[in-house]
Image (cartoon, rainbow, N blue to C red; front, side, top):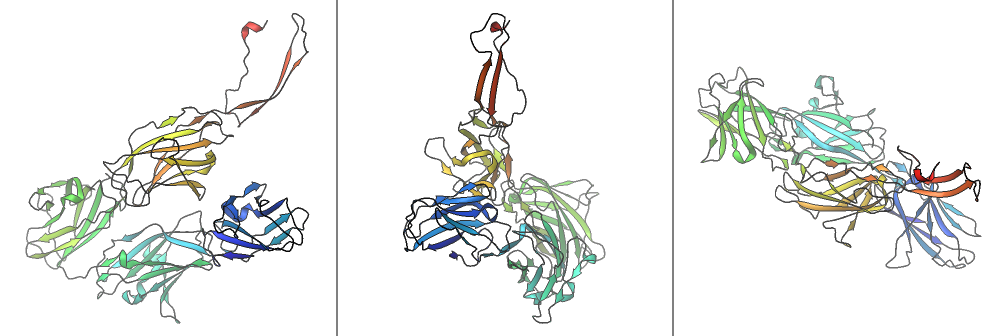
Length: 559
């Protein structure tokens, strides 16, 4: 038996190829048994000898999947190839320990355990990394990175290694599971490699929970521009995940005369949410007037306001129509702002990001004062765009399906911004008899099948573009499971890169079915007038009933 790839990662499709050499000819009862606990999703078998093979689904039998290959000839002393494809159980890390059994009528069964070892995956960017005070710190300023980590299986130990670490001060790199630098664990320089390493022994990463890790570092004051630093996340039995900061973090040199530092709340607003940027500003000398901050009007929906405290009066910032910028002149009575080296000034900016934004806002706030060079600061603000249903309730056809009836769901959806990539629709697998299909119309034959991924049907709708002025109609088509009755536990979720998931519970109320197993009557006919009759029914229901059970007879037939 052979398999490929030779070193699969979590979620990879593995192909097993058997070469069978039977002692005699067999015509019936040929099958391969694979334990269900060792695989994820469907298993298929095929004939490797066919250059364009047909893939056949293996069916569940008790705790195994049975691949019936009776259609293939099995001749005496003649080599017969046989292929099996499956995805190893997703939480597997290390040896899979799967026993595959070839069973043929009137032959001894053949059990083999291919030496498959699965390499896990660590994802410290399960949620986008959060940089504080921003992704654009000043040279020599402390940077904190907040990671949300998941893994395909459970780790036994962890390690973060910093490459190109000459850009950071060795004695200021620390890590912790808590947002407190003073309690964080120092990362040490390796005697063998000279690299900084953070030993995460005792911290478990796994598939069922999010683990938050904070990493602190301080760059040298001579570093300017993209931060050329890679954090390598590793654990025994797992693929190394390299997170390069050069694409995310830019170090600004301390050459300006004004020094604004920004704190954003929230960092990841939804479209049409209000954002507050709190600036703490100092300068090399006291300013004498002209204190202001401005930003492109195209980055803001509606008005921009400023205040000198979170609970003080907010002053509207007017539009400079010639430059198309909103300008906050920080001199309103009672809200005057002056910059100095002795006391930091607080400026709060209140606004809604442009509601068509998807992802990072890239809004540059420019501070100025008389006789001072302008300083631009671009705080990290990531706008989570939204899917917008055009109408509710959802159109369900039929409105109350019976067992065995196909159901159509019709969605009409637009979005707060233009979807970039990653458009998809997902529904948990537990409600469907055979599968889930989608289409942009309800014309018969136009539906595309959805694939199973991580216990969900995932419909790839990347060909559709959603936007503020672009509405997409989507039909979902499925056969509800026979053993369900009442409101179906359906959750339809729309997803796209840079968007919040939009989850909807469609009101599909399915009627179950009764099957008459047996009916009898005592006494049997003929009956005498006034004689008591006993009717005995044995009924089987397609699912567990949820209330309202009753039996009714025509009143006109009863005494």
